[in-house]
Length: 426
Image 1: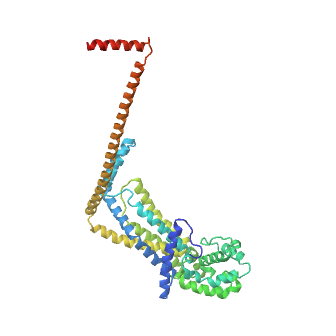
Image 2 (image 1 turned 90 degrees about the vertical axis):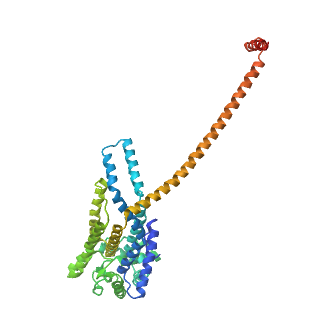
Image 3 (image 1 turned 135 degrees about the vertical axis):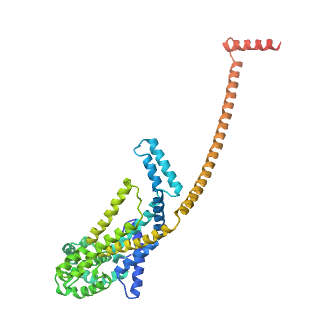
């Protein structure tokens, strides 16, 4: 993997695999002459959500069944409302578990699906945030300019100044003076890819752009920017730039249409997130958990709206494409579940749970029988040991009596015993 991909121990390997798929998509598009990072993001998002569809289906089925049993769950909650003693809590948990068993679902039914999906979706974010690290062809577009920068005297200080001057949140500070070789060139590609549009436009004027920092590299800068416009622009916007930065610069230059397009991305992100939430089945329980979920459903689209203003356009494309794909999936899933007979699914789930419990019951019965046999064996060995110990004690006592010293109480007792035995035989 080239450049500086995300190095997290969990998301890193996932991002690497997703980046490999994205690289294949980009290569395929490049082969037919329409290579574009924005379109690649959309296609990859569609592919990933299609791969995750089986998990999505199971999660939605769980949600539908949960909706079906909500009245019974609420009845149990109302029954024990205000009761916090241990016996009542245990009884409520037992009755709740019986309802889940009746419908053949687990209280943790959707958690596994979320645990699998969330790392993949977060890894997608890392890939889109640093595209050249995962798409080889994109990285190669910067090779000529990077070589020129490395061979320029004092380039480390100049690169540090570029980061400071542009002051973009997407740029990260690097100790350029301590970087060498491949590591240095990788960081330079990262920097160049994330520079705002103002760093490239009007390169021939040599003011407020890269040429003013590297006067001898005007041709390389112009060629690189020409390539960037081909693969890194979507609907007239540089996807490495933030909508907020684009809007500011567009108003400054009078490019109002570009500003309107940039404004649409945060708005579309909010609208598509809301659409997805509206289509997703929601459990109407009225409890604290439901209220919390309702608040989150309102806040998440708002957060998406705010973040989309300051983060790269590429991430906005990902959020919008993802929300649209989920909404389309949800629309057809809703139609599917409206047509199917949930009672049939419930009965099948009941049979599965019954068989599972039957197997567990047989296994537990075997354990109980084995324990009972083992207990009887222990008792038998204990009885044998007690009997042997008693016989041994009696023999020892008899020997002590027979060996009693002359004139002792034991010897006199033996004399009385012998006299009684002789008289009894007469």
